[in-house]
Length: 95
Image (cartoon, rainbow, N blue to C red; front, side, top):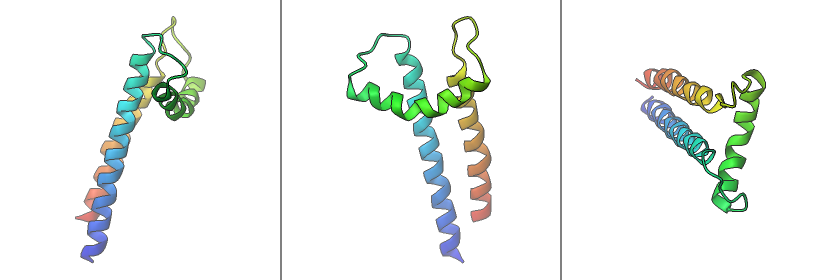
């Protein structure tokens, strides 16, 4: 039974790490929007390709308010909620 517990605990850690990394990528995208980055830069293109599907989905439900895009904030709150809720459930299952 300890193998199952270790697997679930490791899965919770990997999910937490992935969500935290994605949150930092969303923050980097928001900071890039303040500047005029080169759209042909590989790093900028990677960040846009990774974040566009999620942010565009959120933009369908939450419109831009006075030129202010609130979708990164909504996604960051959702990531924090998922990280606290699902990862804690997985860790409780493991123990």
